[in-house]
Length: 315
Ligand code: IMP
Ligand code: MG
Image 1 (spheres, helix red, strand yellow):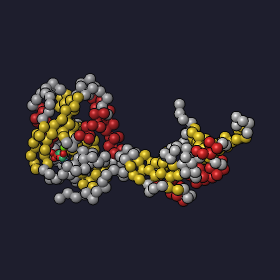
Image 2 (image 1 turned 180 degrees about the vertical axis):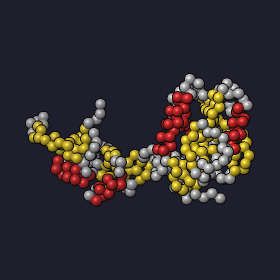
Image 3 (image 1 turned 45 degrees about the vertical axis):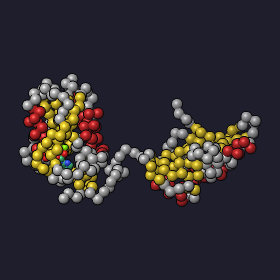
């Protein structure tokens, strides 16, 4: 089912069409003669935004009661919500045509919105819903965040591929995904949902870097695993392998605990670094240069960016 039509009560068919079709840009879908219950002549007039399925039945008021609701069909509440995927273009078109706006466009969490009035004063929302986070619409851009190297879409595509590989390789083994905090948090959350087989997850926190972007050289366990890995198929999930110091340390520590198998997966492997430990499942290779976003931080900032970008301001 769907709501096919909703009625818009107007004073006059033709002035309403001039407004909605010419100024706002709706299509005139149908305009045919019809007869009212009392035998009088009417028109069946349907308008619809281009490409929309729900239309408006333009209904000319013929009684005092009907005339009284023209322009205040919803008692002053916004009663119509016009959704667009190109807010700027539609806003400009309507402004140029002299449509009355009650405010400046607002940016809300749910999207960009402005309230406008039709020729009778009925308030409408023009809204462009906020989409999924993209490189363009996401915080910052800050001066510290440079060129986007991996977009949310590229990351999602690659994770779907890795997930398919892992689903096949780990079917029926109930692997234990070990997420190395904090950096791999975002990656492991997406990766685990791309693996369509039973699995478990545990967390481990290490610190190998100081406050900002320079390695302190030493790996320290800050939070250990909750469970025994003996006999388990363990997959270590890392955000980025740089020198490989962290991963090598963890591999040595875990292999001593007799897992059934021990493999590694990293979203990013930094290119051109000698003597890195083997990464069995590799998301991307990136050239040297500090990066932030999608879990990766600089001084604990920028982990929540949905993309991976060059960090423009390393000290
Ligand atoms: P590795 O021990 O040198 O391989 O460094 C591994 C850890 O350092 C990663 O898990 C990250 O937490 C951190 N790291 C390395 N490179 C970057 C980067 O470019 N941005 C943010 N964190 C990084
Ligand atoms: Mg890390």
